Image (tube, rainbow, N blue to C red; front, side, top):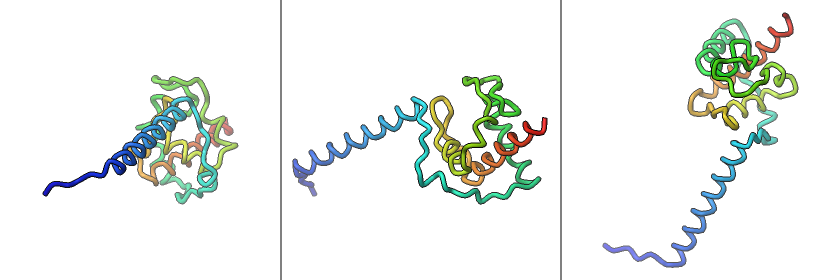
Length: 140
């Protein structure tokens, strides 16, 4: 059976498709340009993962696997593949857990998104580990 396609429907579909492509390109450009503007609704997200010895050990393993190469063992930005010269520990304090989670989830610039690499719990563990690295640097 042959389907008849209305020309107006085709124009509408092309318009929607081009709008979606534009939005995707704009979003990619914002991320590549370093836009770390966290949506308001994400700032208030609460970390569901408790901080204890077990979760800190789990987070340390994930950090070693996914983050050390760029951010360094202590988060000082001195990893072997570092492309940015800043200390992660200095950015933690003013940010909420929700903001850190959003940034880990979405990435920006040369930092990749970890949404497809780490599950929700893994990304929350990373938030906790960043707080741990910050606390460790204060003790030194």
